[in-house]
Structures are given as structure tokens and as C-alpha cells.
Length: 93
Image 1: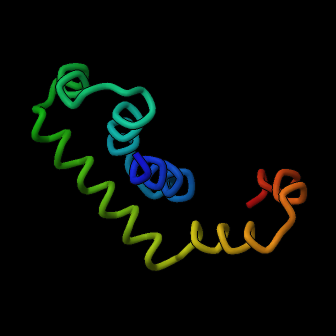
Image 2: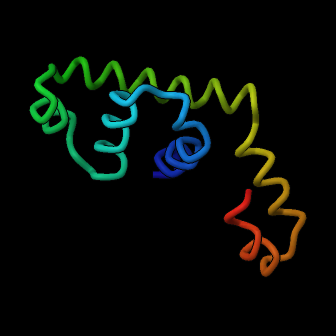
């Protein structure tokens, strides 16, 4: 479960770097809780195509975070700030 939360948080940062198809599959799977079979049926593609795309997106999210460290930097900033201040500025970081 923790991995899912991590991936969705990374997606918040890096989603604009993906194609519409990649975003659609990722959002259907992680946000709308559709199965790969349901996504495949809805998009008229194979389950294997969905699986490959989701793996590709996960790998890219980790690669982008490894290079840019936006999530890591946010967590460091939050750890240094008071909870009240974090709540006020959280929409900006």
C-alpha cells in the first residue's frame, strides 16, 4: 500500500511528462481502481498492453524522482517546518 501512495505522489509531480494514454491508464488503475482487464476492455487493447504501460510509467516515475528529487525535497522541507506552516504552504510545494 505504501508503494501505491508513493507512486501516486510522484505522479502528482511528474504526470505532465507522460502521454495522454499513459496518464489515462495510470489514473484508471490507481485512482479509479479499475482492473487491468477493465482498462483493456474500455480502451480496446490487450491486458498485456495495459500492464506494459503501467510498468513503464512506474519505472519512469522512479527515474524522474531519482534525477529531480522533487518529492524528496518536499519531504525535507516539510520536516523542517512547523505543521501549521506546512498546511498553509502545502498547495505551493
